Image (cartoon, rainbow, N blue to C red; front, side, top):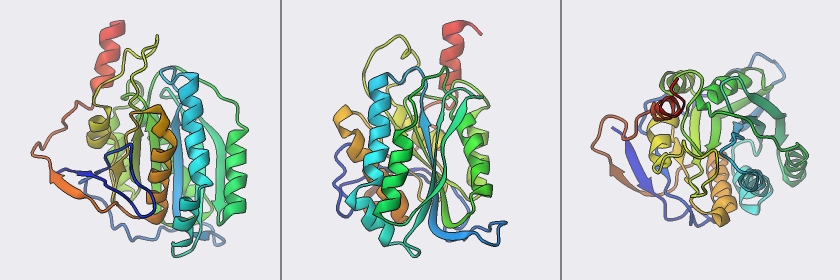
Length: 282
């Protein structure tokens, strides 16, 4: 059974922009401490992969807002408090951008955040990367790229999380469902940040009105997985900060949980592929 939950607040942050949805997908023990092949692996509370959509449907302003949201979140007071509240008081993070099935680019390799100075260094490194845009949207390709990053991280996390942000459904690369299930089976949690702004441009024909439901049913998974949709431009930073704080703290918001009666996805997990086929006839 799947569950949806509305979030009134989390600790120091009021969630203004989003309804947070918790996944009901079965997954391995969330308390599992992952092994690392390196004898010198550093213990951290979470190994966090930030997977950021740079497809053409993201206009330049949205790309800037998306990146600035992550930078502001990483250097925020709330993020630092969540960091220090962990068992180890530090996390490892890497950041990559993705578009089509064969288009993923690592912007920042694994970095340790253990306080304000290292957080500032991470934010500065990400901010220096040039912006780019590319064609198609392959969430499955992003997940396939993200999964092996953990194996060579050099860190040993209590939790492993992939944070996927994007503004459309999968329309390229492998089918999303099997890839998502493979990642979850490896003990990795996938959280979603669907961007749902009404902004017509030449590349938004593939938009769907209920992208949050698509992310709930087709993208996220694993222990405590959740979705934080962004529906307004001025809520980018707040929603992103809320999401990262929850991920670092390893917590879900105290929320009213409402069971969803449907046992099948409310949105077809192949809607993006079908839209692309209908549009281009292939």
